[in-house]
Length: 441
Image 1 (cartoon, rainbow, N blue to C red):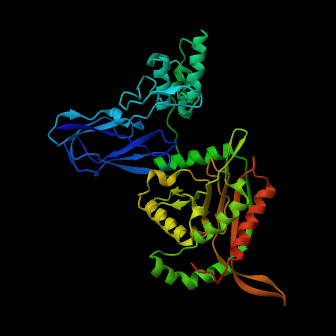
Image 2: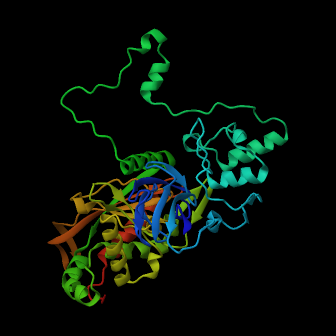
Image 3: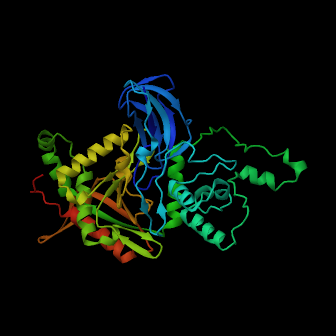
């Protein structure tokens, strides 16, 4: 028998940890190769982790709801190859590299002890642990380092500053780590001891139902608030006559489905027009890093997609500018179906550079979307409605029934001024209005 380590898989370039949502297997259960062992979640996507061997679950090293670093051993499988050996965890170690500071990152040894569970329940990223191992910083020293990251976590900058201070003899001996406290706990602290007994949980008057947010809703709430705190939001609006686009799609959609095996929705048509305009105005396809503007050369379109539970996720069409209309249609349909069926892969939500959200799907005429960080712009597409409008021709003006739609662009005013934002939005509208009704797929 061989003992095979099941490790937390790499889930994307910027993702360093994942939460265990549910174990599908328990110790003693038989598991086949590629059979789902557990479900995990990151701030991007939920995913299933398959078995890397056929055998029997020997041990589960973490519980549900535990947050586990990428590359950590999470379970052991007793395979049935007749050889008694243990597959070393170092098989998934990262190669020796140096970061931008010149500090060597020693290979990360996945183990359930690399994310120490101390009295303060602090989490240390693999990079911080690598630096600590290289510099001889032990666990007790790590506990002394004040963290400036989320929930008081120690960042690379924190540990490097602490190491430098220690070498100069100015590092603090002990630092009490800040603990997140609820509003009720804060109120209790401010009350005299004899009054503390009177503090109770909030009481909501009237006939109400109190619903605890699920994990994804909590993440969405945090991301939306963080985005508003990060970017100076401005939203511009325009209306667009998409009659040519509507008539063309109606004419070709049946043949398109027969020929390509895919339904032709409006979304790939909209994305095609947006890509053309991004090429003309590349600053809309950028991000901000301090006082630097990072203009993205790849055009990766995030498309906001509704999930069955009402939440939203934004899978990404990678290198969308390299696809023709048929390719865009296939990508849009695959990602939308995968999102609705909880089958998105971790890479499906990575590296978006510009977001499109179709609020018209829900009947809205327009919206003021919130920027999907770290992007600098998001375009909301409203419902297509027939309206009487004035049509200008060489023979004079006339009133006609046209298919009209509102577009709204929210952009980061730190780098996208009103003139650029409005110019880009107008260009998108013109691209859609001048759609070629005689084109092929």
